[in-house]
Image (cartoon, rainbow, N blue to C red; front, side, top):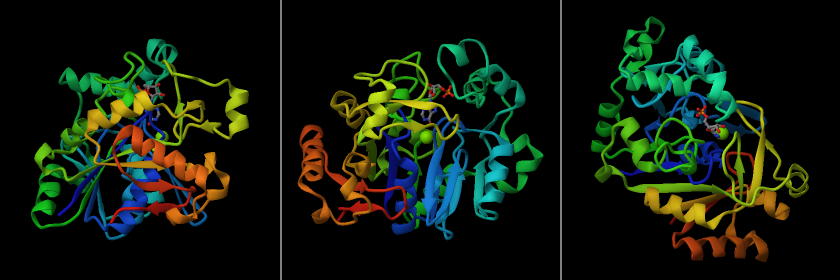
Length: 333
Ligand code: IMP
Ligand code: MG
């Protein structure tokens, strides 16, 4: 049995979706289960020439033999979820926990104005106001929603039973460590804890059942929305380096900066990382695009990776070298 938790180490958009898709295809988990805040998080996955942008479904759905689930700690937008299940052909193997909270129009409205929009730069998805109502004990739950009836399941029971049967389970985090409500750059944060412990609580797995924690860092830093960002580049510099990106959910230009070791160290500590994944290495080192073997990296790329391992004291096991699911150097033994 292996339970693997994958979380972001910076401000989200580290490329977790792609790493999770790779793991879902290669490690053949029987379940991929998503924790985190809600549909504020967007993952982009590229399979051949198909591009998927998911906000509610776990990114592991590309493996057709995997059941995908959303844990009870996540607030769900039923329209977004049902559309993704349909669009991506995941009918019959996608589930939500009975106790997932439900985002309604009123939450989206509250999230699209005032301080949440102007000061925090929220995604406008309704996630924060729904989580606030959950804390007030007034939020509707999935089990009260007719259109979700055939998707309902007891996620903690399913996940723990799969581990009892010695199956692999992949636990998918969203956002990134420094957007955590507890550990991030408050108030410029999301509305949940998104470190490994928070993600595990969201899906109902205890700390002693976690085998591997992979913290994912992009080769450079990006941040969408407001809040402090050490070493922020101006838009021209970012674009010259090729670090210009646009948000999956909001389409907003992401702010960019150099890889930050202080933030990375803190993320490794907060989630007790057992492995590190570095994504978008090809953006920094274009001649390693699509490389799948460590030996084929040039010396600059190798020393970039080596320096991260030395400074963080954790092994880099998965390196992203391009947008496609299999553009990965897999160093796990
Ligand atoms: P909210 O989570 O929509 O309330 O937004 C709060 C802050 O977190 C804003 O700065 C958002 O841009 C940021 N944020 C929320 N989810 C994500 C994500 O998945 N990736 C990157 N930033 C996010
Ligand atoms: Mg994203």
